Length: 136
Image (cartoon, rainbow, N blue to C red):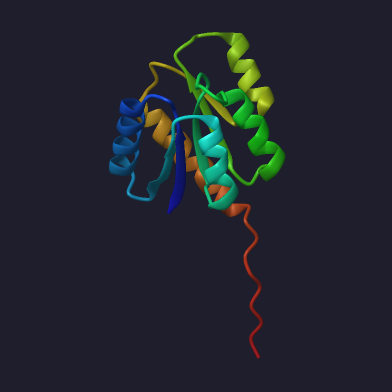
């Protein structure tokens, strides 16, 4: 299972993403939703997540700052995909510089997002060191 956190201040959009991702690929599970970066960071500090989907424009703590803080505290152990409704090369560059692995501009193709979440989630799970078991 690939564990996903959705961080977006617009509840109806979070619900659309959750419903689509979990229906399109049963291995994708939205384990939490956050209305702002502070809520997302609080969840991430205490719970395992493989991929975070982050809206750039949120109140309290925006997506750019959330990306920076996740990378500072978790390194590359977690995949980050940002998105925004503003088609701005400056925002895209800021998101990537802050630590996002990928950035989407709305409207985006939901199947492309699902594929990106799946690939990123699998790659992050593969980087987790397995526990060594000795027999004998």
